[in-house]
Image 1 (cartoon, rainbow, N blue to C red):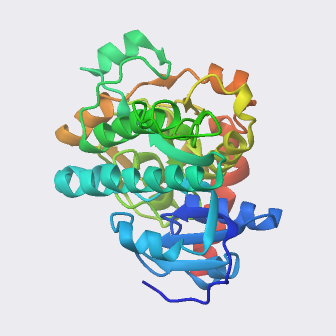
Image 2: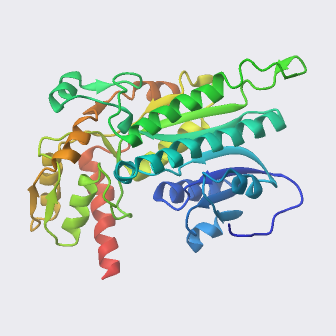
Image 3: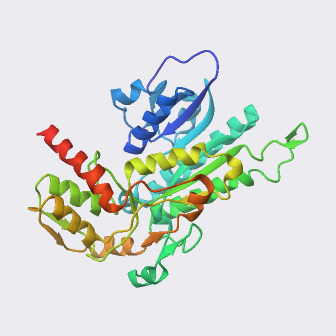
Length: 355
């Protein structure tokens, strides 16, 4: 763990795990501009200098190492936690037991830290947790097409380790928020010391499309992979069928929505978990739009049976009505607007700058 100079008193702070990813970059950039709390960030690898400049402290730390987390947070009063660290879907299927350790045990560590800090200071610690459409489970593409939009608590029968992990962690968050140590008798000034110490909020991400980050082979990456391959002038072999349809949104929209949920008054939130999404195109519709902007690109569809089965288990569309009602979520882009205003200009510029 990287050493740094810590103050002599506990300073109010926001703690971010998995800070080195693009969601972490976006959250830290936004939070640092607010100039209100110290930002303490961790990742398995050293984060870049630009990110370090926006944080009070950065550390190399594993969320599974509780002792390391306790040491690095010893001088801070943690008021908010954004728990982004996770092993994602494709890697989780290759090493499911390791994924469980990271995704579940790591989350328990974070929730325990939040509960202990909440008990210590007598105020709830806000924990913002990104979940995934991988928590859903349909038996076939026909089934999910017949169902259409799904709400947060329907069809939650995941078929991947990542989805199982995320769904379980949603329930863990609910437990820590509402039922933590419910049979314990310790109390302070007549109040249950254990109840309400964690303010858990979960945003369930669809597939995310970024112009800045090159896709890393995730199961929902067929859309960003198409775009980036076209921008590089490469042929793209899509691993799902043309008619495959799941919900997506752009990365900036996901970051904005996460911050908006975090900022919402607790009293206005009617549930723990919230769906968010912007559009639900088929892979074929995306391919046509990619060819509109990159006419020379070649896209073929060569479905991988196992990966197709995973994508077919995810819903076609999400019901985001409760997020809209409770904290004002609104998509910024349609698919066409996302291409025209964000994705295509940024991706073209990225590859021009790199050449």
